[in-house]
Length: 193
Image: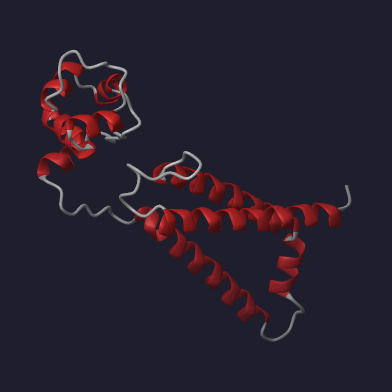
């Protein structure tokens, strides 16, 4: 394949990745705002699932851009170094400082401490023991297995009848028996305590 054709394909893929990244970002920000996950979906996918799609599109977009830079590496090096003149060292130094600054700004959120507000000491200790992922799409059995809590304890904590189907999903159960997913998380945290 000619290099020009490969560059064209990479550029089209990068543009498509950017469009999908923007689209999923708009979906998450404006069409499925925070708190809409319990009742709103687009194509059967809720806000959190669109967040997962957004993440993987961004990973793919990053990989395509890295490939694009790799294919144009000689041009990048030529642009930075340019013709050797009196200011070449300064230009190279400023370029290096710029790249390092960009990398530092991009990495800063990844190494910053997580600030948890509005949480009790119990909740913070539970999060420190491991991630607590409980969603309305999970069944009672999945919740018990994921959280390491007996299913009978969950039934009792949520005032559910003992005859409740263990393969029922939390979302429909929460509407039927008037509890929230936060109530389920609290029950799990209290059990872990």
